[in-house]
Image (cartoon, rainbow, N blue to C red; front, side):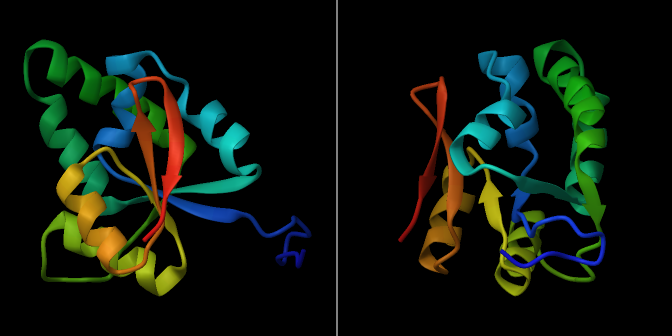
Length: 137
């Protein structure tokens, strides 16, 4: 394996979607540990637009708002990236960024998952509300 400027081995880049960070609070799954078990060393990434989506959801009431507030805390374990794209939905920006930067995407969103798979981008998703799996086209 090649190494980067810091001397660390290159790691798989995993781009987190909004709902992937809410999984621990909805299904009681440690997504960071499960990812490590599934793919080994990885670099968790999150787009600024996803953080903005979480911030908006966090202002809500009830379980959804509470899960979003907790997800915002979890997001601090990810490296924030600017997508650099001015137009398109958050999902379109995720797909474009993942394709251009060679990322896997962690999402439980069916529409996003289908879009990514159609583009040949590997998707990590929660299966049977308890374990993560990789889907490929």
